[in-house]
Amino acid sequence: MMFRIVDWLAPLTLLLAACQQAPEEAAPPAQRVAFAADNRALNAPLASPDTSEARWAVDESGQAIHFADEGAERPLLSLDCRLSEQPPQMRIIRHVRSRPGQGALLPVIGNGMIARFLVDATLQQGEWRWEGAVEAADPMLDVFTGPRPITATLPGGGMLEIAGSRIPGEFITWCRAGGDVMEAEAEEEEEAAAEEAPRAEPTGADEAAARRAPAR
Image (cartoon, rainbow, N blue to C red; front, side, top):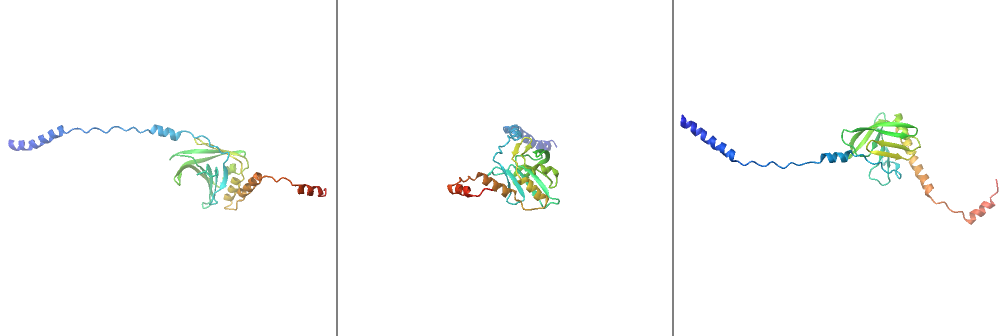
């Protein structure tokens, strides 16, 4: 019996000795990730953009308008009419960075009123942006319908100074009515072209014709 116990213990003793002699592997060096710096950069408030050259324009689809600088890759603010929803919905989109799960109020001030739109971080077309929705008939949208300048301020995203225009008012009326032809954009372009066109100097023939014209 003693020989059997020794025969059984001998391999176990050798195995324990081998384990004790095995070199310990060095732990990999710790890596420090600058999460704090990245978070500070993402949370840093943005400066208000220069909107002196920005204008409203109708989207190619005809169902949205954008406030943007000419030739810009993306607009600053958009109004998107969803006629397929009943009743029609208007989406207010502020094109500035957002993060998943965030929400904010977007106050729009002007035309004698203050409207506060609830917007949430939304991923659309690969862009994290701020987006909210109200019924097209919501009286808060009247802040866009007047001819006076307005401001739209997003906490941490700067303030937009938006020049007065008839385009938003006609677009909202169009959306509320379920879709009518909009003419404000074409009219404003014609007026701008007329203001920029040089005035022709009167010629001698014009002056002579004016003198011959009978007085009324």
